[in-house]
Length: 88
Image 1 (spheres, rainbow, N blue to C red):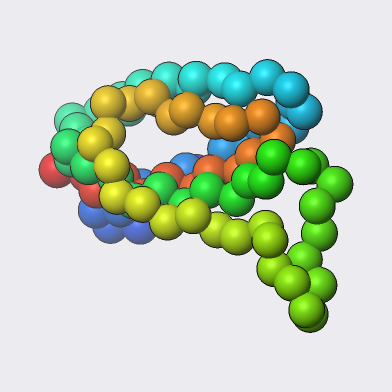
Image 2 (cartoon, rainbow, N blue to C red; image 1 turned 90 degrees about the vertical axis):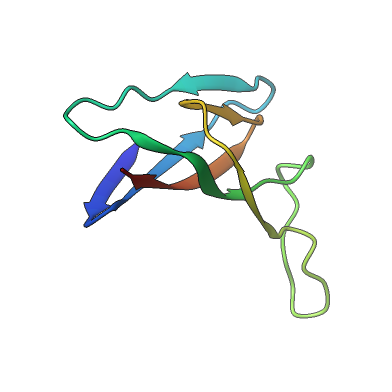
């Protein structure tokens, strides 16, 4: 788990190294500011953990989304998530 705050943006990186199990990770923010209702989520994941990208084929891609933020990150098995949360 890595995090960095830059002004109104909190960036959190979480890695699930487990090959078979997905995990829910609860992030509790302390302090006077709260998280906005939505967050930007960037996920790196492929069902086949041995899959690689080559010049000819790039099956492992970063999935970008904007989703409701409840304070819980849902990590697939063998995945990495970067979450950008706006603080209000």
